[in-house]
Length: 285
Image: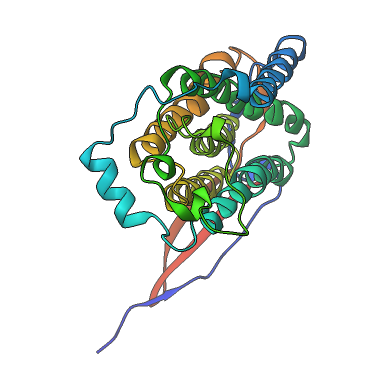
């Protein structure tokens, strides 16, 4: 009995645009005289409200009750013996891993496609989305005044009833809603993914995937560290994602009629061959 043999008889990558038609990729709207001040002032406002937390934070909780969903998820996810370890790991994700990954991979994607001139604008747009999200998050936390889970449940591992530990400052006890860490990492993930997709970078799927994975991990660690409830991180994830998608889309969408460098395209062709078939791949990159 004869069997069909599938052979990769041709696997050709052409390095010139003539090999595969490529559609021009539109450039994003970026105005340094507007976008840079917004980003810098927004970042300064967030830092200022952090430094002034003692005077801005509510003296006592305005939202003190805990619903059954938050109580049950806390019981299932909190690291009873090592909440501070989870808290420190969440700090590493939001202040180190997430921004380095989002900004670094986007810059790498631009370089990979031969479009390094985009990198500075990409960095500002992504940072701008995060800064705006964090400013609105900060305002909400001060207004709502939700009690953090460690304070509500009297978690001695965080509150330091024993010796040799460092208790969070009391002015931080009622700033649970909604999670700032989660807002930051999800806004970074969504903004970097959106910018990469709008640019047409070939690495865009990877940027979305790694950003989302880091953001989900960070959200989990906020609950494991007893700093936030499930509804805190869920709201932070939704709000951060919305800011990360909407700010680049609404304010930096491509300018009509302005085209940038070519976006990679690939073409796969099949052809009959003796005893099987041959496949060819052509592309421009």
